[in-house]
Length: 356
Image 1 (spheres, rainbow, N blue to C red):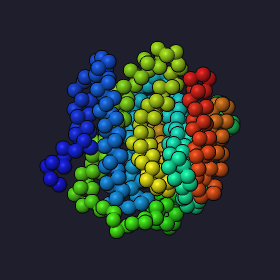
Image 2: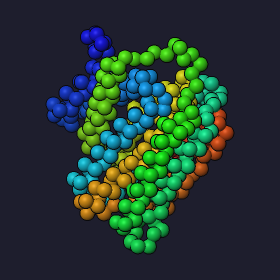
Image 3: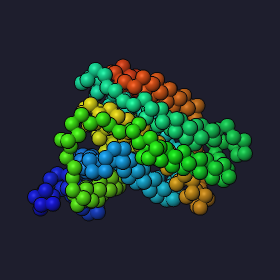
Image 4: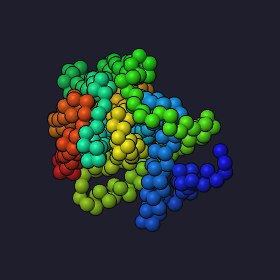
């Protein structure tokens, strides 16, 4: 690569963001937080660019898998670091973060993608088999991790005992592992986006791909760290508005999911709704399929109680979201109504977080 290529904003913003984060200037005033927000936004856009470079090189569905796994690994690291540090909300942190991420992905990212695509193209088409494969895996893991703990009798409350936690963690890993095998080997054709002009596609060099992958990891890491650093500012803002603290988790989850959200929306605008589904549903599956087992191991090692079961209100909202997504993706084509309904569900979720 030539030196002038590194002067592109997708290389400058991550480097500036890393330098600014470790300079200790964050949180020193309103201006410093505004600068941090600008650098965070630039890092998000940079992450999307580098993810697209890697995806062009490795092809679908590997590109979307890489982005989903990178974000999930960093999300898990953030959750574990906060849980080990302790605090009032440590025992519910994993559940609340995973639930917020799933609701934002299923209703928010998917809803915006379908709405944007519907407005521009009226209808967009995708492989029903891919949606079914995603949803079968997602629904199973959601029930095992977020609903079933409320109905077991070995421990009182929304908890699993150690044996149950180990079993559910293994079950999640088995489902996700078999799904990856289906997605990448046995039925890869379910998830591949048909290319109308394949010969026009730009294939980056190995060196450019390696550099982009490195910057992708840097971008995702700094987005999470800056989101964590801005959490106190966000919390103060939420409290000044009189909203409950649980809204902070939703805002942070939204920031962490921004790279995937932007990439999915850009794909929908390019009439590649299959890529949008791969990004959104793949991210939801990785989030619950990998986060819960990883957090379970830490909780067992450090003897931290782990609340997993949702309350009745959240179970109803989750059931509504999953049911609407299943209906919306059952025909292999989308329109603006599906996107609108999903976004209304998202608004209902956020409203009930603010006004429980």
